[in-house]
Length: 117
Image (cartoon, rainbow, N blue to C red; front, side, top):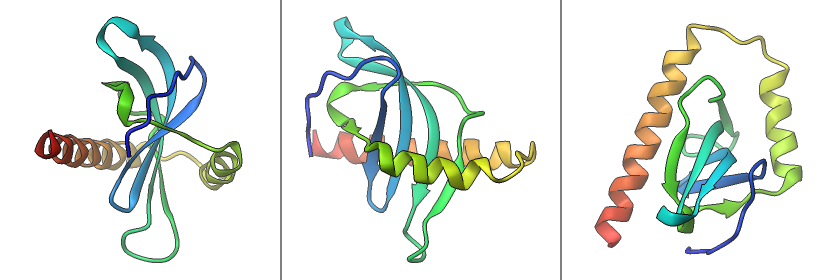
């Protein structure tokens, strides 16, 4: 699904691939390159069960990603997902796992979009 939207800094948007969604916050719009600079927040995976697996990605690296792949996130979705991670105490050892999950998601999404091009 290709949506050309004009998001602004501070908005929550997501990238979707298969049964996973990467929720991010728009930091800046790079107009001349048709990119968003985004900060990853959450990775939601429903692949293995009916229950959502939510991974906190706030300690991972920012991304530059093509504008046309982002979709708007509903506030009600994001608040509910945030509540799931905010009640948990952050654990430094989970930071590496979060980085690996983000890397895998981005790699798979990038490859899928290269194959479609």
